[in-house]
Amino acid sequence: MIGWSIVFGGDNELLAKKPLQKRGEYEFTFDMPKYVEDLKKELTYPMAWGNSDEKDFESWRMMAREKVLECMMTPPKRASAEVEIVATERREGYEARKIRFNVNAYSRITAYLLVPDGDGPHPAVNLLHDHGGHLFIGKEKMIRPFGEDSVVVADADEWADRLYGGQYFGDFLARNGYVVFSADAPMWGDRGREEGVDRSKYDIIAGNMMMLGRSLSAFMTYDDIACTDLLATFPEVDSERIGCAGCSMGGYRSWMLSALSDRIKAGASVSWMVTTDVQMSVKDRKREYGGFANCIPGLRQYLDYPHIASIACPRAMLFINGRQDHLFPIDGVEDAYSEMHKVWDSQNAGHRLTTELWDIPHSCGKAVQSRLLEFFNSNL
Image (tube, rainbow, N blue to C red; front, side, top):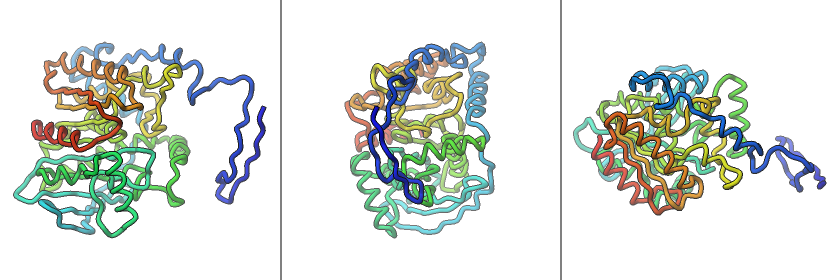
């Protein structure tokens, strides 16, 4: 057995790390229980369309949605938005606005809004930022930030190069005639920790939220719903032509929002779809890497990821995953796609669900962005 000692600083931070203590017997490996395969066999998803006793599709949609919301625990209280524009910037073909508003009764947040030149109302897209283990920026991953903070600008430019082919997706959509909105999720950007960015604290904070009867992941989705409701009220926006899109965690947020908000008429998800069976496997060395960012307590007892996304049926949805994406094994992606196609096909809406596999890693480069623009042009 290897011993180690821990030296803590004033903020209870680990200053010196030595080899972990180990016992000869153990119950967890690769951050999962050894009996993970047994647990997966017990997941029968009784509320999935086709498994549920409810045979009327619209009734099933409402019932499944209510179950998701129930598992998301107590929602944040709503509040009047009281929107204020705090800064504007002219860009080629559109105006960028920095706005502040009450996303709920507890949080007044900053968001970016891009408004194309010309007469409106315009179609609109709520752009949902990724996780990436990088919490210092959020909305700035989607929309080029205003230039008053050089550190934020430099960070955002580097992130755009890394994941988005050097192109800000929001600005790309705005140049093509879309109103674009993007806000920070809780724990990202302006909504982070007073003490500074520390990815390891996300799970601790999520646990503390659960002690208060709330889910940090659910608050993210509740905020996405509230932001979409707000977007629909802007005079520049055609409230009947609102879509959403995102990559990675933003892709998860996109199909969650599409499932839970009827304001969304078309949703696009890049690099986030899989089945739990393939996602969680000690044998294949696969597991969930986002932690509590997409953890809704108890929900897996009723519905898997593709079943939840199917609540959006029969609206238009586009899913793109990469064959080189090590986070989402192709067999799990294909199984999830198959489950969703069964649902859309059952409602004679198969033409409104598009699922694609690209020869790309975990990313949303220029070609993918162009594909999403084509999708929105066809459906919004």
